[in-house]
Length: 528
Image 1 (cartoon, helix red, strand yellow):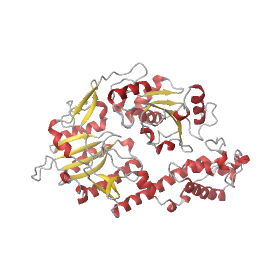
Image 2 (tube, rainbow, N blue to C red; image 1 turned 180 degrees about the vertical axis):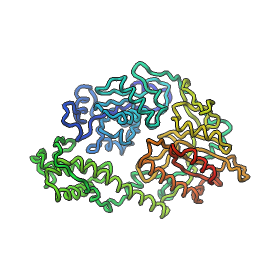
Image 3 (cartoon, rainbow, N blue to C red; image 1 turned 60 degrees about the horizontal axis):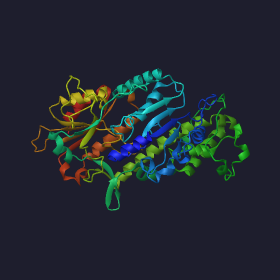
Image 4 (cartoon, one colour; image 1 turned 45 degrees about the vertical axis):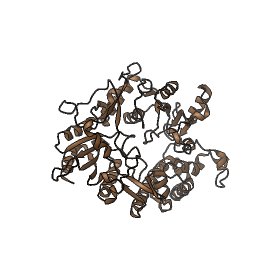
């Protein structure tokens, strides 16, 4: 496949580096099984049996993240990045996206259909993915341990339907059943929308950088300002510990030489069950939620000392993973709470603004073209006809799930609609809030306002995220909170300070649940 990638790059300068993601068991889970596989064991096997070079392999887990070593040189997207194999435990399931992840090897034997759906979905919907016209590069590959292919296929297809990803059901096939979607065709914006589409510039959270403004970055602009000293780690001390836990935890991922520098640790005591309160390990496990390991170590000590004051060392040791997972959850909530405060303070002191700027940042303007496989099935509206008022003339089935199709069909029946656009995840317009994950809405609608006489063909812009009933969770609440703030800020004059063409435009950001979508859309039409 790597040869195919290089060949493709030579044809159209498309840079593609296929990566294999290998999923292994989590620490502290199913450890008594004889077939339990460690990340380090997988890496050793690749080095000794598959003739893979060390620089081509990286482990990404809570206690060991070798991908951080390449962040300073551009990360996985850099053309100089050597990584070809990433061994992980749960990163894909927890929302981490891996560019160029073409191959997934599941070395666990998960019984959860939801887990399988999440894993395969991450591979199928890669960030920055686009069709190349090369069949080997336009497909993803899944290898599963101890699962029959037909059963796995059935479970995943069913899971996609339940997760609101029905558009992907028909795109999954066993080896030898690959659909031929034909070469890519370039589709441009419909002629009747071209002029106005070029003038539509969407707002973004921008931060002052000297005399200039640039898009906000979570790590450098939000996370770096979090006041970690304000976190009270004792919020994680509310657990009731069990005394009958089977002690089967396996310690891995730490260099014992590092621990020798800590006077509280002695190498000879590391493997003792009752002495296995490994604060260094725990601090490493918190790095993804608290990037400062020294601060993480301080919080770990406070939490475990609280539990040791109420329980024996053996009981605390036996509940080590239980406590640590709860601590990760509570610290993450505290981090997000403080990050929200940082976000609002930046807005308050005018260091950050939600505004429109004319510079082309690639994500704040609508695309001028789409590449679509020639044999891809065209999407039909609910009345059985082709969509007419999309920004692009062609809409394919895989772009819309059931709820999204219903919303788009309904919008096309509204007299006020000028055009609608299906915003592509990980590619098109996004909003950066106070959490790491960027928000990619499903739709952008432009509507006219017949209550006023204006020269402009539309005066209202709606950025809309749809949520299936089964997908409503804390993430939905967060998106609603961010979008509500965006709507408030969009009413301010600073929105169009640097883009005069956006004057007299009204913007709203909405998250719409499946059970209320039609009512909410009707309310939006009536509100300016």
